[in-house]
Length: 188
Image (cartoon, rainbow, N blue to C red; front, side, top):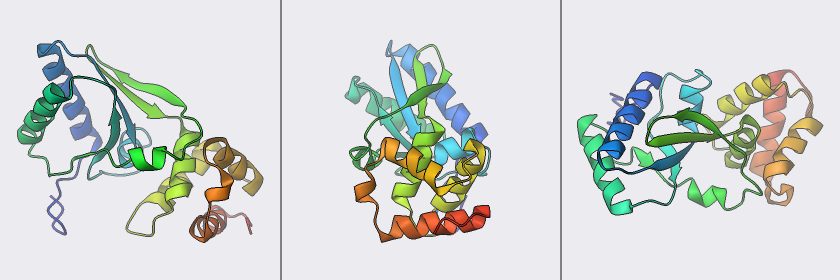
């Protein structure tokens, strides 16, 4: 439990337990679901660079939303999750994405968990460029290392594949400069 704001944090193990549980409830209700996860959930589960996340940033495929809502409420109760444990606010920044490159993270009998490719996730982290305590900077650093991005030109190429460069503002430009510095490069 995070004593700062009463949010139950979700580590990799808890996230996987939640997906297992969701799959079982979907199976009981003969429902198939695809969920695309973003942000801290991916960084916690895939890159193991975060001990936990406070929510699951996601988008659901078209489905029976009334039944899904009941399943999500059961999940919240079963795992004692905080309000807002499912965060669909990612839909708004996704409107600016030029294309989505998704890949399968995990497949269950009735649940398929997708995630954006690392390049898309990096572009989204640059676009968000939130100040601390948000983890965008650290996540972007990890993703640049993972993708072996060593030049500003290469980073801008990745970003422009997913985001129109015309929407980058001063916040994102400063973010990129500091990111380069922390990686040991001059990206002025």
